Image (cartoon, rainbow, N blue to C red; front, top):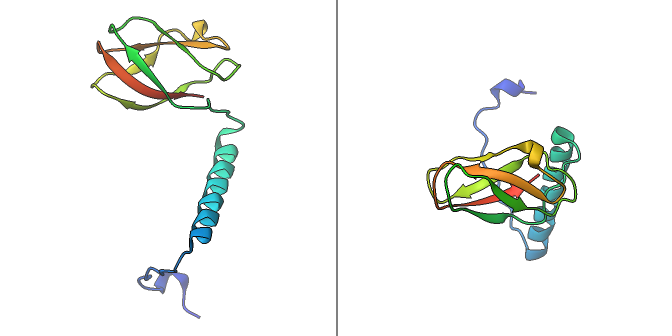
Length: 115
């Protein structure tokens, strides 16, 4: 038996995947990701959808509604259309229905998820 460190280069294996097999693979990967997420981060519940927020004026509080029905732990910014930083304005103002955010650049649109 060869030592594991001297196996050499591994070659990729290509297997044909049927449409049903592809759906099963996708579901299996999603289950694995959810399990890892639960193990690493605990029982974090994400909002139902990513939301689009327009920050009309820079460095000004913008109240954003969410659907978590609890005070959020934070947010994940997925995209911004300008080179601006989206930050929490004052987490003490966060409620079970809204969060308060700011952006450093005027007229910036951000896509985010509340967690």
